[in-house]
Length: 237
Length: 273
Image (cartoon, rainbow over all chains, first blue to last red; front, top):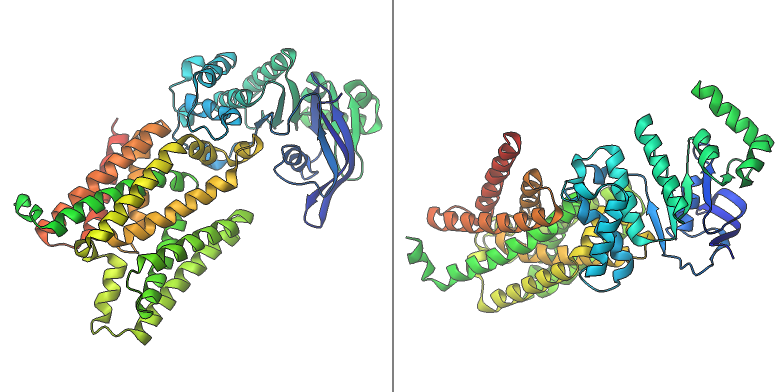
């Protein structure tokens, strides 16, 4: 049974439809990259999967023991966060809010979980540092650790490498690949088609009128995939 | 010399209430500043002024019982409109705040029986003497509400932090973001009505944001910023009140002046460290 199944989704705001007839499913252990041009509805799709907005039509079903809120989310950074006075530890702990319910304070297990995920992201030595003084890559690691406190199963990443330099970008991809290897299912929005076809197991291409969902190999073989990969290669060279 | 003044019960009341109000207002200041909500405080304080004017016209004896619900209601309304789109929210705040100010002043002019109208308006806006004329009942009400605010803040501290830092993430992992935003708005409205006694409606925002901004200059964790801002706010309010009692200056503006001095001091500490 699939972790997430989307059936005939229509997405958008009020009467303005951005995407429709979207169907795909994600199994445990998959690494799905969502690609497509700007404004094609990638972020809207992710927000809908997270329950932040309702689909106009269709349904999203969670299976395999997944509950709708049992996801970790790495949003794009907001302006507020860039000068937020908080330590790394405070931020990572806030990921445990997924488990605390109405309990006002964190218990020992949750604090241990936060420490464990900090170490897992290689940020253990930074726990007392101020978030706003970290580099972009370090901030992303902190937010990843927070997301891992919320889930062990599924991470949704919204352009995790945007604004990072090539070296840090490569490290970030390696980190995400390692998490996927440890059994965490990954759904990632990406602009970087080269990295998407290199690391992902599945591709969901959304855009005006044409959608593709399938494995990376099928995507490479498809006309749409061919054109998109070639286009990106041309831009990058 | 100060001991002499402390013999008067109204001075003691003023100091107790002032300290409590300063403590409460600084607690949520950090969240308000970080959420870019600073202006909501300002808007709501004008609403409270308008409500005060209406209460005066209607001859309601305990005006807090009228002003409080009206302000809380407006806080909820502002938050609801502010959430959908940013610009609309900004405009809504400006509209409600200036509107309430104008209508309040208009009503006072049309219906007031007071002989010293401009004096009344001035004390509502700048809180010149009202803190020194508190009755025992008002002190108790103030104390009770302050305790409730502090307890709520401690109980929901971790949740307020999570929602302030990242609303989207909190929502995604199942936190009732809207409920906490509502809680924040209601508490802010309560604090504003309380603080009107101390500094008057025009200066309330200063009481809420200055300690938070000062603390954010120097401290690096959310907890230390919150604690420092609370301590700073209490110290500034006490200093301001004592100076104003001894020097005969208006209470509200003296407290805000002390807040400004501390803000400059903290900025210097940040610079030269």
